[in-house]
Length: 244
Figure 1 (tube, rainbow, N blue to C red):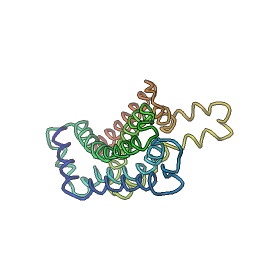
Figure 2 (figure 1 turned 90 degrees about the vertical axis):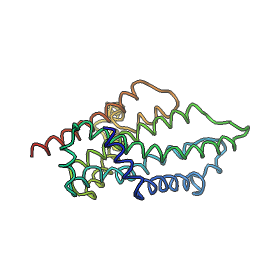
Figure 3 (figure 1 turned 60 degrees about the vertical axis):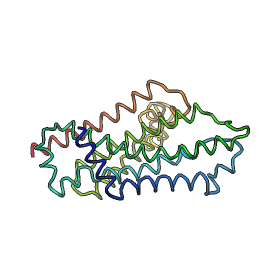
Figure 4 (figure 1 turned 120 degrees about the vertical axis):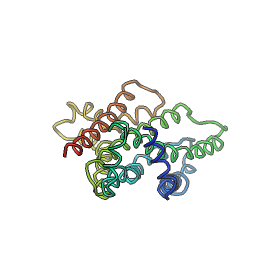
């Protein structure tokens, strides 16, 4: 697993992918936090990072599938997936190595946003007037969110040798898993009956819950379960490739 992990990390660092990911994420979130008038934090009367954690899922919906789309699709296009399969590695080790490498890259993109936290902390009146519990919870929720999106992206990359198709399907599934259940809960067949249950099936419900600063075991179990589910889907897809 570690060999695959370091191979992927070196691949990211030796190309522009890693640097582009970090730059795009910081640029997009920075524009919404400090530049765009409707979301500019300087226009608000209280110190917080709600804008960052509100826009980050939307940015990740497109950014993370763009990172993961090459994980297996490129291997299949170049014919190196068969070579990788001959190594003394199990499918689980290959998947987890690629998963951890992609997630590490996303975490590297998140870390520089601590500068935003420091800036808001200093701008508070009085200084430090910010809900630190909510910020910590939001960062934990954002990391779990990234974990789910990476697992979805890997699955989509494993079922198609075309990177563009893997990106499109990945972006759609990320959007669906995060927001679709909120919209579905408003349908007449669910509203007022099981709408709350439908909402709990989506990522957004648990992401907002953990962002309040209270780490609920039910939210953690949800995130880990969805990650495990899509990693298992990826394992099945690779197993079918071997059978074929």
